[in-house]
Structures are given as C-alpha cells and as structure tokens.
Amino acid sequence: MKEYQEYFDANQSLWNAKTSIHVKSDFYDMPSFMSGETSLRKVELEELPNLSGQSLLHLQCHFGQDTLSLERMGAISTGVDISDQAILEARRIRDDLGLKSTFVQCNVLETDKHVSDMFDIVYTSYGTIIWLPDLKLWAEQIALRLKPGGRFFMAEFHPVLHLFDWAKDKIAYNYFNNGVPYMEIEEGTYADNNADIKMKEYFWQHSLSDIMTALRNEGMEITEFIEYDYSPYKLDDTFRHRADQEYVFDHGNVTLPHTFVLKAIKK
Image 1 (cartoon, one colour):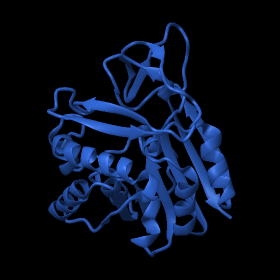
Image 2 (cartoon, rainbow, N blue to C red):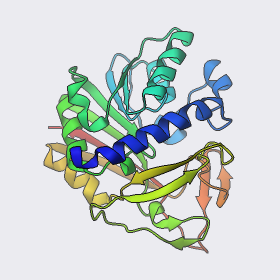
Image 3 (tube, rainbow, N blue to C red):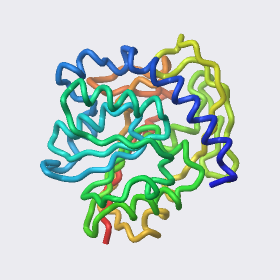
Image 4 (cartoon, helix red, strand yellow):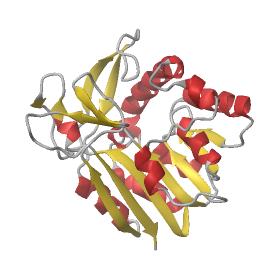
C-alpha cells in the first residue's frame, strides 16, 4: 500500500473538495432525496434482491445517498469511503433523516482494519474501481467481509467506455491495466463542470477479466453478468438522452457497452 500512498492522498483531497460541491449540485438533487426519493437507478432497482433485514456493506459510498437509499429498502447498511468530508456529510444527512446507517472513513483496500462485521451483501456502484490500483486487494476485502453464502452486487461503468476521450471522440486510454496510473488535472466535476476545482487525480484501467479473475481467486462464484448499452447518468455533454435514465455516447452508428451488473456469491 505504501507505494500507492501519494496517489491515494491526492485522490482523497480531490474527493474532499468535490463533496461540498456535489451535495449542493442539481446532479445529486438533495431536496428530492431528503423528501424521500431514492438515489438508486433503475438498473440497480431491477437487479437487487430483497434487502429486508439484510446486512449490507457499501464500498466507496461517497456521501451516502445510495447507502441511505439501500437502508430505506430494508437493508442494515454500512458505508465506507476514503473521503473524510464525504463521511461527515453522510452522517449529517443520516441524522437529519433519522436513519441508522453506519459510515466509516477508510481506504476501501483497508476496510478490514476498520470494519469487523460480516455482511449478507457487499455492494458497489459506478465509478469506483478506477480509483484502485490492485483488484486483488479489492476482491480480498469483499471476500473477507462476506458471510459464507453472502452475495456481492456490482453496478459499474463498462471498461470499454473508459477507452474514450469523449470530448475528442477518440480512443485515448488503454483497456488493460499496466500498473501505471493515469494522472490528469481535473477541472470542475461531473456534477458541476463550472466548479472551482483544479486538482490532480490518479486512476487505473481494469478489464472485465481483471474484475472477474480477482473475484474468482477469492472464492467468489459469478452468478450473473449483464451488459447495458446505456449509462444511467449523463457523464458528459457528448452523451445523448435516449429514454428515462438512459444516456448514450454516440460513436457513429456503433452500439457500445456503457454499464454492467455483476453478481457473485461467496462459496
């Protein structure tokens, strides 16, 4: 972990800066959320199991909207995130809503040092694994925190989508992870392009085989894998709205995978 610490520190600072902007943004629509609307997309809502009474660990939860939405669906939720500002916001929102989810600030790759409970479900979604250099460590944490027979649920942007520089409409990134992070200067955020942020970010590409192999090597059996030809979020102005919660990156007339759901069970 020490060899990656400077990258983690930079990304933590970035997400700390993003948090206060995101909470106020139209993208996250806090007024609707506070009045009872779910933050989950139709992809997750259609594929999640019955959560009533299920203990659930949400990895990389940001400021907790999805964690709290999962609690509203009946889960006994715990969320972890590297951003201390995001966790403070998550706790504040939880308390304002009178909910009970637990929020823990830690690097997801060190979850076992901060969370000792075992869970029925481990959950993660959208824009999470690109911040991680090593999916072996990530899969280890998932397996460590799942009860035998416990289920893993992942909704994520498809790695093919990460190949593109959307604004320039060209392939600009590797599909396979060579261990070396990309470094870019982020200006604004996906939730507010005009936000007063100009900071370094570090990220890694991961192929589908990276994800699946890491999970299988930790004793996880993949039970379902579904690909979608749309994103539930408008990630950029180059994405076209097609239907409710469906945004498409048009690349000529080629249909591209945008997101996927992966389900697995701990043997």
